[in-house]
Structures are given as C-alpha cells and as structure tokens.
Image (tube, rainbow, N blue to C red; front, side, top):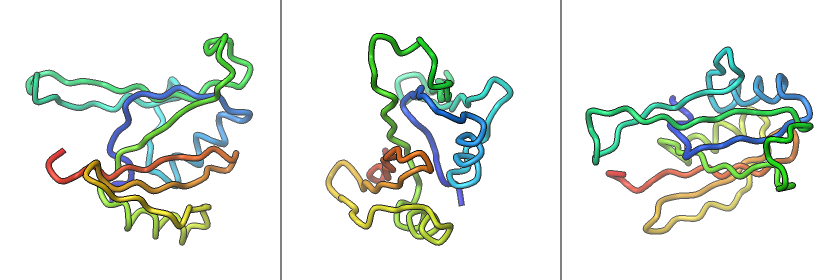
Length: 128
C-alpha cells in the first residue's frame, strides 16, 4: 500500500534528523534522497505536460533558516486510504489519534511522530 502520496511543501527542524528520517521512511514510506529530503513530483490540470515538485526536508534544530520564526513545522500529507493507513500505523505501534474528521473537503486523521509532532493525514475527496 502506498502510504503518503504528496505534500504541499514542508521544511522542519529535528533534534536527531537521521533517526527521524528513518522513522518517516519506515512508517510513512517516504524515500529519503542523498540531500536529506524528498522532492514529490506531480502534474497539474493547468499544465498536464509539466511536472511539479514539492520539497520536503528535515533540518537540524540549530538551523537559522527559519528565523525569526520559532515554529518548528506544519505538515499535511496526502494519503490514498486514510482508514487503512491509520489501522496500519496503529498496528505498528504509532500513536494514532482516534478522532477522524470527514467533510466535503475529504477525510482527516492524525498521528504523532517519535518527537511529539502532530501530523495531519488527508485523504482528498474522489477526483481530487
């Protein structure tokens, strides 16, 4: 099962980037490239021949790249089957929020990573 299908763009801090990258690879299926992150590629209906990319990368917590903001990150990951992924993550010992929201905007669920960061998982409505 493909776990994560894309993100809008994210950069965030970590106390132990290598360990956290391993967790994301193991539990969410994100392949880490040699530069320490991943570039999701996608096509837009406005430009179906072009390929877009969405960057995802983990920085050491000492980075000044985020200054003057003190926020560490905000993530919303696209998924294909939210219910199945939440069941799988729970079976793998991940801390899964039992709450799931469903609306015309899709289905939303949450999981915590090992450093206590809340991750939003989003299954878009059919056709999006």
